Structure formats: structure tokens, C-alpha cells
Image (cartoon, rainbow over all chains, first blue to last red; front, side, top):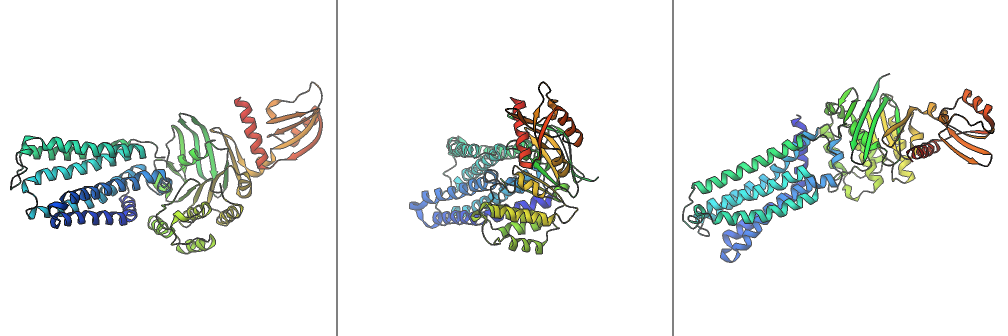
Length: 223
Length: 294
């Protein structure tokens, strides 16, 4: 492995995506500010804006750095550099995760400010964490699909499945007794249901990433 | 003789195409013209040489490195430009130059700036505004300024206007003043190949048809206008193509020599013996290959 080349490829992707990532960051922070100061009337809009900023940051990064790199024929240029296909795969996973986690972690952390005031009951916090992790899982599904299939069609398909799947998943989770019975409380309750769901989400995310890396490492041809 | 590229018995199977038993040797310091029609296997061979495609069978050595196993070491000293390769459209040429400089320690700033001027390229212009010719020049700049020992150029002059083509070929010839530098140059434009190559390899339908130094190659081909004596047809293996027009037969042969000419004279009346240029040889090969397939 050549860590120096992997780092250079990651920095290259970060540089290309920087203006876009800053705009998604700005959108996410606007949503948080709106949720805090906008009152109930802007609450739903703030939530939609927040989810949109996170989703767009993920989809755009994947399309730009993986799918378009192939369809726009930047890949032969990159692969003419002293790297192997395995190092290229690792640079894409690390670069994409770095970009998305940068947005996801900061916006997620900042969003907890909402719970300082009385806008939402703190009992929502476990469910909110499940929601944030489900966005991360949806992103991981799109990332690994685009890496393995290398196609626009499959990536769009994964985006649709992730979008619908996340909503159905969150609706199902909200119906669980361990979640529904504590969601309106004044304090967060970390029971076995919420911790189990969070653990399962983390496990599936890691499994997806390992699986995609394994498949890509087994490939003989990159072009 | 030191070899920059050495392939033995390379094969690669695709659902609709097979690259079969490719043997290719490119001596260090030479310019190998890699000629073949569209879909003959030029790009696949070059991708194998770059370690981007793994052959099903056979061995590849590039600058002494086994490919694809030692591709990182080999690619440090190989410049690769392909006609279908693209730079990042949202970024400037300067971004790409800085990136390449960070990757290749041998990057030569002065030479890069000289090439910028020579190719009339603007460092700060985003590459999405580039014409096809500018794009090829930009990629050539990025490949040359890293001072590679081996240049692999896949159809770099395809689709260029005559002046851009001339500029690029001229630059390549300048580069080749360094006798240790090797170039593998693929094209279906035989004029370009004839102009700059000192070795020629023909690839047809996934197989190497012929490979030798240019002079030997061109010397072995002739177009002969001959009226054969009745019932005295020559050995077919010496004929690549033949056209009969009345009593006159126009044949092309790739085994021409003084002895073979004497043999032709014994078999009929030889009216003319003409040298062939690379384009005529190329067309004869393609015609022969199609006849054999049909």
C-alpha cells in the first residue's frame, strides 16, 4: 500500500468538492438556526432542509467523485498515476467517508442544540440518533453500490431504495414499543430497543463497507 | 538489446473480442508505431501494459517491472495519454499541473512552462472550455513534464486538425532527441506513424500481424504488376492481395527481395514493381485479414 498516494487522491477529491460541501454545510446550519429560532411554524421546513442538506452532500459527493470520474473518463488519467486499483478503491472509500462524515458529524452534533431549549422533548434524542444513523446507512448503501457497480443507473437505483427504505425503516422503528413509549418524555431513555437498533445500524454500515472493499479488491480490471 | 516493453503470449478474453498471443518487444530508445484498425486491440494492449487490465495469460514487463504486480514502480516512469482520457472539467490546467507535481518528484517546472507557451495553453483556464486539440496538448504536457522514460500514447492525434497534429508530432520528435526515451504510439493514422516511428507493429483482430523495424518492414512490401504465364500461378503464401484486370494481375507481397523478384520474373512478365507507403500496406493487411475471415 502507498499511503502517500492515497492521501493525495483524497486531498484531490476534497479540493474538487470543497465549494459544494461548504454550501451543504451552510444549508444544514441554516436549518438548525431555523429550527431553534423559527418556532413551530418553521419546524417542518427546517427538518426537511436539514435532511436535504445531508442527503445532497452524500449523493453529490458519490456522483461527482466516483460515478462521473468513470463516465467522464477521468479514471484513465488517475489510473495512469503510480497507484494500484486497490489503492484507488481505498482512496474513494476514505475520501467519500471523510467528506460525508465531516458534514454529517458537524451537522449532527450541532443539531443537538435544538434539545437545549423546549422546542422538542428530550425523549426524542434516541430516535433522533437512530434517524441520523439511518441517514449514514443510506449514504453507505449508495457509496458501496456505486463503488461495486460503477454505474449511474445502479447508483440512482440505490438512492431511490435508500430514500424509500429509510422512511419505511424509521416509521417501523417509531412503532416499536421501546421507542414509542419513551419518545415524548422529558429525558432520553436508552433502553435495549434503541441501543439494539443503533448497534444493528452500525454493524450493517461496517459490513457494507467491508463487503464492498472485499469485492473491489478481488477485481482484476479497473477499466 | 535492452527492452522497455516486453510482452509474451498475452491473451485476454472478452465476450465479443479476444486478444490472442500478443508478443511485443519495444527496444529502449525506439519509437514503436502500433497500427491497427478500430477494435483491433490497440487500446486493450496498452491498458494491459499500464496494469489497468490483467491479462488472462502471458507475461508483461514494462521498464523491467512485472505488470500488473509492480505497476506502481513502473508507472513512476511512464507517461500515458489516451485519446478518450479526460481531465477534471471543473478544474484548471494549473490544478492538474500542481497535482502532478505533487505525485512525480521528477516534475520539471521550467519544461512545463515552456510547453504551456509552445502549446498556447492558459494555466488558469478550466479544462471544460478546452477544444479536443487543447485537451490532448494539456494531457501531453502533463505526461511530458514528469520526464518519463517511456511514453505510451493511445491514438493521441485522432480527431486533431492538421496544425494541432503537426505541433504534437513535432513536440514528440523533440522529446525523442533524448535517445534513452521510448515511445509506444498507437494510431490508425498511418501518416503519423510513418513520420515518427522507427519500429512498426501491425495488430489486426486481436493478433499481432507483423512487427519489425520500419525500414525492413517497408522494404519487404511491394506492389507488383505482372502478367502471369498461363497455368503458372505463383505460390499463394507470398501474395497478400491480388487483383486481376484482364491479363494483368496486381499483387501485393510482404516477402519482397531480389530473389523473390527473380522468381516472379520466371512466372510471368513483370511490368512494374512499386514501393508501398504505410497506408497502402495497412489497407492490404486489412483486406487480406477480411478475406481470410470470410
